[in-house]
Every structure is written in C-alpha cells, then in structure tokens.
Length: 349
Ligand code: DP6
Image (tube, rainbow, N blue to C red; front, side, top):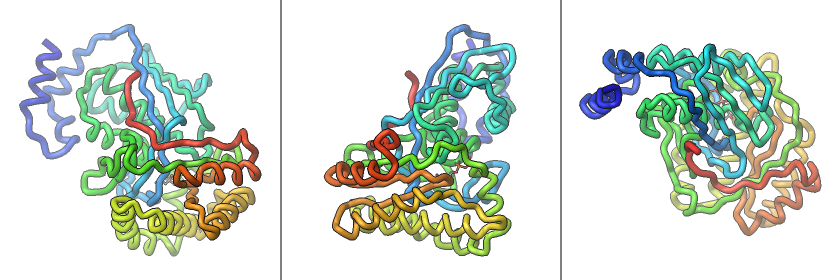
C-alpha cells in the first residue's frame, strides 16, 4: 500500500519546485508509516575539483551560491557511506565517532520534510578529510544517495543534487560524474561533458595533512562581510562561467587553463583581502604553482587550481601526465601524489 501511494504521488503531481513537492502533505503522511528495516544501504561518491569556483552565498538558509561553478568529478578518490537504522542519530567518520553539526543539521532538514528514521552513518574517505580535498562534497553526495535508496524517497539525480546542495553546495556537483556545472535558477547541477569525450587528468599534490582552521562556509561569510573584492568577484563570475562552458565545448585547453587559473586566483584574492586574512596556501603550494607555470611556459598542457586549502590540483592532458607527476613528486614526494581521471556519478553499491 505504502509503495502504491508513493507511486501515485510521484507520478500524479505537478510541482513547481522540489520544496513544494516535499511539502505535499500525503507524501509526509505516507513516509511516516516507514517501518524500521534491518539492512544497511551503502553509497559511493567522488569529490570534485572546481575550475570555475563557488565562493559566497546569496541565501545562507537554503545554501544558494552567489556564483555559478564548473567542476570535474574525480575518479579513484571516494567517500563510502553506509546508513543503518538506529535508536538515535550517530555519525562515524573514518572509524571515529564525531559530533558533526553540519551533517546533523542536514539530516534534521531532510527529516522536517520526509520523516526518515534515526540512523547510524558510517563514512570512510580513501583520502584526507577536511584538508581541502572536497570531502564534504563527496560526503553529502554519498549520504543523500544512500538516504534516497534506503528510505525509498524516489528522488531523481537532479532532485538529489538540489538536496545535497543544502548540506554543502559543492556536493550538488558530486552527484554527477564528468564535467559538471551548477547554476541558478534551479541550483541543481548538470552534466556538461560525459567522462569519455575529453580525457583530462587531475594530479593532486598533497602539501599538508592538517585540517583547515577556517571551514568553507565560515570563510565565505567572512569574505562576504569584509573583502573589498567580494563584489567585483561576484560581478565577473557569470561571464567566467559562460566563457568556460564555451572552452569546454570547443575542447580548448589553453582557454580552459587561462579561465580556471584566473577564477582560482580571483577567489584566492578575495580570501587574502578578508579581515582577518584567510591564507590557505603554504610555501609548498606556491612552489608547486611555480613548477606548473614553468611547465606550461615550456609547452606542457597543464594548469593549476586550489580550493580552501593548501593542496594543488594540476589539470593536464593524458600526454602531459607523466611529466607533471614527476615534477610535483619531486616537490611533495611520490606518496603525496594522487593521479585521478574523470570520475562517475554518485551511486549505490
Ligand atoms: C573553494 O561546498 O565546501 O571548494 O556550501 O558552505 O559547504 P559549503 O561550501 P563548500 O565550498 C567549496 C568551495 C571551494 C570552491 C568550489 O568547490 O567551487
């Protein structure tokens, strides 16, 4: 009966937005009849690296970015999240019990609309957590995907993207594989290019394992409030985004390199100009950037980007990967290099 009702709700309504659907009262009544099940559900999602950056929010309650963004979903690095029903909500990250307010808030936002049961969340990352490698992007994408399956919520990938966004806006992009965009007015991510059509490589150089001291949400708010460059940053974001979409369509590596480095450096400029200043880089970050610039000047197809952290992400063509890996290895050591390709969708395993 429950599933028939779900089916009817899913197929019979017309809705303007995901929120009005979630507010549809029979949907909630139906979900309240959910019976505790003993099995667990596991999902995997990959982090992503933004070429055109999201930095700043226009609506903090809904977590709506003030800039559109474009990213590459990364293969090999992954977050694996298992949910099991429990008596109270508990969160384990990399075998440690944690009191993660962001995740708890996200679950309570979903619960306001869907009456999901109490859960134990068990998350493992095969890469450093909270050090600027987008663990929150893959984390919320995996959690949203697992919840959708476990509680038979029936959301589409697009809807999952909008839901994941509320946890962390970059995670809206990690629902999809390939090259992915996130823009208004829907603020659901969309695939720009499937993985196979432009086989770019991403070589990550880990320059530090420290957890960042100022998280992205807090850093963005500080930037919005205090940086004199915040307003011009927002003003130019849309044209950078449009130009980047064109560069991807035309597979113009040079143009992509120029636009991506510029978006990164403009974002870093807003961070440096906050009060107090936000300095996420370390001397090794800069050393890697200089090495990448030198290679590009000599004709190697490579460019850099960084996020709210000190790690370097070098984007290159398959032909350049060996040289880039060698050069960055000589700076950070081979054990701190992660070679990625373009990764796939968040999925149930
Ligand atoms: C620098 O998605 O982590 O990586 O939405 O507040 O959770 P919240 O922020 P988050 O910010 C990512 C910022 C960035 C750039 C990007 O990924 O676009």
